[in-house]
Image (cartoon, rainbow, N blue to C red):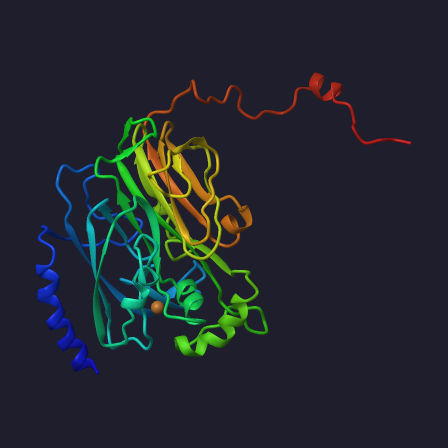
Length: 366
Ligand SMILES: [Cu+2]
């Protein structure tokens, strides 16, 4: 079986190389929240962009209490890496399922057209790899995820198997009126809802294998109440010393994906200057937003120029999920404070007696 697959691949490879006379570019992917180097606008013609994703089934720690989780990942990170191409480029993905894994996996690209987003053509058993090519005909940010069929689909997705693709217009982003928009930094925040079963005492259960975890996990998934909602695979993955960094005056593009569940990103103390809430760059961005909505199964993009230094929390504005379940990141921004935008006119002090005396009790008295 494996020999046949290798033979098929050897036959397929020369054909792949010949049928498109386009330059090739091999991209080294990087783990989120970072994004591989890329041009924002390009004068080059379409290319075949080569990417490789290796599926890793592994145990990951998902909170600061050390809760262990039977994760499934693309390239070992949750979410998988962001892949950036331009409209008209071809994405050529090698999907590798090492024989150290136990399960078949595949990939459904929301940005691709046909064959279940490629899911039908990419199913690989442990010990196999496959090469899929698709043309990036639509611009925007799009989710990709594993979709190996039936009950395996939601389980693989909530185990961590999702990521995103960003297809940029060849002339880059614009504000909807033709004014070019350029970012100084780009971060990719993948949000995951995770479901970890508890024991009789209410403690998170630990399992030795994915198979052991499955029955309890699927029962919990059906209740639709996650135990964790995290950015970058772990509560606290992007806070404190892992905070995202920026400087006052820089335009930051934040790509946010959620493959399974709705989310409401909000930057506390900041805004979305330009927000492609549905993530598709052929639509004009919304401006000046306080909170935006990411539909489960989609990715969105928000651009913001930081105007004040400090620590900004970037949360999902279901604050229970943000604070209790983990969906909080931090931006650490350096630069000069602008008093005109905000200034503390008086520090906290005791209420003066004359003000205290004038305060009327508001409790109704009989
Ligand atoms: Cu999978």
